Image (tube, rainbow, N blue to C red; front, side):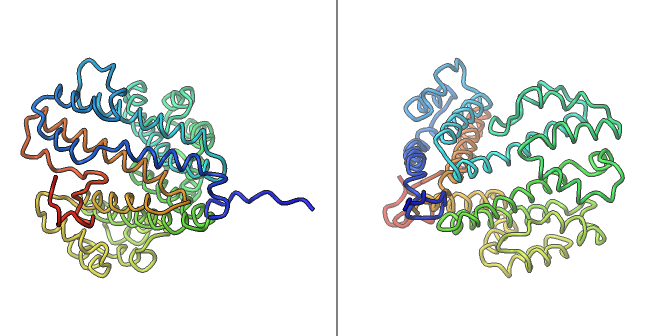
Length: 392
């Protein structure tokens, strides 16, 4: 009798290490590359960007910056992002199914952002080279595909060709197809792209991506379904809250559009779904939004930060702090895929921190320099011992 091969179930504790043990070990080893509290302390004491470069030369960013003659915030960001992309691509080459598909799902978000950037730039007549330079490297298609977008005419036939050539033939094509299918009450694809604002289209596509990713994660089962599922639920809730908040003062907040167009942008997953999102569809101002979020303790504290405006924090700052805490905890479990997603998102936060610090130094705004969210910080308010041993 032949022994069957183990199933490629990312949530199966019995086979996870056999299938995905090496890439998981890699990503957990990469955790040691994050800047520590001492690094941030030294960076915030810098007086010039040359000092920043000198301090970073003793960190994991040494090789990424060694060919840079003059450090500027945009150059630092580009080098750090390219370093992250190299790491993610290496992890992808070491992965097999279903982990390889999981990592692909992470990149789909950047593909959506890139295509929307190209579409928006094309409609406004911006140069294609400038647009491609602004695209995120994790979401790049082959260059011929990206350069084909501005070649289409602004006619019904032109947009139909654009849809068939670019939107369908990309990994995120199904999300575009789903959006256009739901917008089929409009007679032509061109009408959809011209009449609906790009940000609304982007919100729809991100919604489909979150729902698809959540369904895939649920199918994996095990710890991946629990931990990554919760991260995606919180991501979906964040989108729903931001969509509602950003709609105030726009046509989306008109009573006729709240229950139709705006509600349709809310992901059908999350802690707020379905009761919370139904209530969000009815709110018309920030006071009403606050009353809805007060019913959900995990979001009431975040909203209080926004409404109080304490310490100059915005709701985005509160979301970043919450996200960092949850993403750090994703590394605490074993034998699941969430650390791969957490690593990418935490590195993005670290890059935001570096850009913020360098911008404050460049603009001589040192009083603002500490307004960032460190990653794996001993002094984080949610870490046990931070109050006992003080800051370091």
